[in-house]
Structure formats: structure tokens, C-alpha cells
Image 1: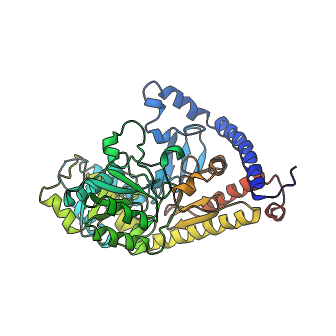
Image 2 (image 1 turned 30 degrees about the vertical axis):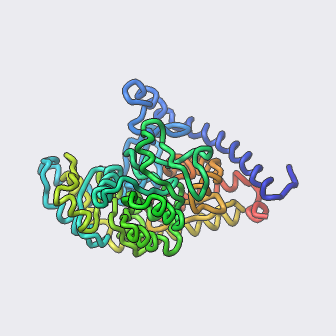
Length: 470
């Protein structure tokens, strides 16, 4: 065994050992998900790639789910999981919550679609206005549609074609934002002046050039873009707490100063709260930071498991819809089933007591994970807010360039250990966070921590924790 204890040597040893553990755990995974793999192979003849979304095409194999109840899911092989995947952040009410079951069952019997509004649409809008401090709302059907509407509104309001987005953020799969989501290092350009890199050949250069990319948390970069593209920038869309590359909070004062800077140049600020909305606090990142932007984009958790989306904004922007300057449409907008579920989410489930429960789970998971990292001498730390959190096996994560330097093996191994230990996290690595629900318990949190400790012990080769940290 090497006696070199330098950081570079320890890193190399850790990565070599992680590769061994990933190979072992991948075999365990495949051996116990044979029915999932059989269905995947069979589905390839009728589903492109054998899955319903490219995000479901994951390594080492796709897991097919049969049912969910409370905080748990069961796959087609019969394995039970504590579900901290949460459907990429949708599931903060858990599975088959009685209030959702009752609301949707009642609505089904009354009719499920009219392409006309129902009274629940007004109730939900009032609840959202009260929580987020934005008075006027409209509905759509996904996070992609919400961010698309936000960009359209900023362009109509200003008559300007360009927007600013942050390097490493994902805002849906419409053309304006499929830029520099995970750009390759050789294409990304300088760290302080990133290139606008399309996500594949589906996005024309002429469209990509309308999206100017900046690093997260860098006001000077935004100021430079606004100056260099004077009179061309309609606004900026941002994850106020960045969640596409782990979990990164904004620097102190950044969001408030960002809003002031954009307004000084006649541009608007839109928060993409598709992941953060309702999850970090009753008012998402708006409630966490105290900054109310010009537009807020919601989806995911709002619908209690049904497809949903919403956009709220200041009157001068939302009035563009009322006046017909922007035609915000969608056959399923304000669908009765979604509105019934959203009403139950806002009025019956995500109460102050629910957020007290999130805080208790958050402390248990974050404090426990931090203690395991320290005890076994693993690199990293934990970030968590509300029902969201992430174990980050790196010394620094403040922007996309830090993310590029973060070794993939850590997140991949952690995902496999959690999954093989009965905890389903979003597949499959360093990008995603856990999502707890109102139906999770301390037992679920302890299962998560036990799996993390099992990985740590295996990585350190059975050494006592004090020796591993030395």
C-alpha cells in the first residue's frame, strides 16, 4: 500500500477504489433488477430507446416502477425503496397522499377536461399570490412551458431579443434555454466569459446567439453583458438556488443586487423555481431569500404528482397577456384535475406543520451525513434547504467550473450504494439532490445515512473511522 499521504495521492487512491466499488455495486444492481432490464429490452421495439424520456435512460440500467405509497416505491422486481428521488422534485407530498387521492377522485367524477376554467383555478392563483408576493398568475403544463412563457413575456415587454442565463443551469427544453447546460470543457470558453454552447445540433446558431451566458453569482459578468449588449437584453432567467449541478445557494446579496442591476438597464428578472418552488420554504426561494423577482416560474411540486406549471408576475408583465400582446395558451392550461390537486397541495398539505417536519428531517439527514463524512475522512459537505439537500463529495462547489472539477465517481458510487440499500435517489450522480416528502419519517432518513456509512466503510477498506480520517 502506498505511503504517500499527499492530497493528490489520496485522491488517486480514492478514485481507484471508487471505480472498484462502482463495478461491484453495478453488478449487484443488475442482478436484482432483472425484470426491469427485461421490460426495457422489450420496450425498445415501441418506445424510442426503450424509455419514455431520455432522462430515464440511465446507468447501469433503467428501473421500472410498479407502485408508490407514502414515502416508499416498489419496482417491478418487488424491491421496496425509500423514495428520495421524488420524481426529480415533484414528490414533496409523497405518494397517494389521502388529500390528493380525495381531491382528484372527486374531480374525476365531475369531468376531467373542458378547456374552460373551473373555480379551483382562482383559489390556486390566490394561494400562489399570497405565498410569492406576485399578484397575477397563469397556468401551463410543465417547467419548460413556464420558463418559455417567462422569456416570451420579457421579450414582448422590452422589444428586445436577447436573454441572459447562467452556465450550467437547465430551464427546460425549449430553444432559448438549451444553451450551456452541461457544456464540454473544450467548448465552454473562459470561466469569466463563457461561450454560448448549444445542447446538440437541434438548436440553430442564430437562436443560440440570442442567449448570453454568465457564471453563477458573478454580478460583474452580468454588468459587462448588459453594457456590451446595451439595449438588446430583455431579461435574465436564473435558478435562485442552483440545482442543476448539485445544490448552490446564491452569494449574500446577489439576487437583490442582480434585480437592481437588470432594472437599471431596462431588463427584467425571472426566477426559475421549478425545483425550488414550495420546496425550500412555503414560498420557495422567494421566501428563503426575501427577493421577489418580476416573474416566478413554477411546476413540479405544485401539482401533487400531476403535470402542472404556473407563471406569476408583476402587473406590467402579466397585463401583456390581458391586453393580447402575448397570447399565453395551452389546451390543458388550468386542467381541472391539476387544479384540484394543486388546491389540496396548497391548502391541505403544505401547511406550517409540514415545513416543521421538513426541517426536522433536513437536520437529521444533513447533520448525520456531515458526521459520517468527517468520521471517515471523506471529502465534501452537505447543503440542504427545506425538503431538498445534497451530499457533495468535493471541497468547493460555487459554479459550473467547480462542478467540472468534481470527480464523477463519488456521486455514481453514492447513488449505487443508496439504490442497492433501498433508497432511490435521482439517477445517477453528482447532479441531483434528495427530495423528502411530508410522508417521510426518521426511519427513511436513517436508511439513507446507513447506506452512506456503508459506502464510506467500504471505501476506507474496513479501517476504523479514526484511522480513515488520519
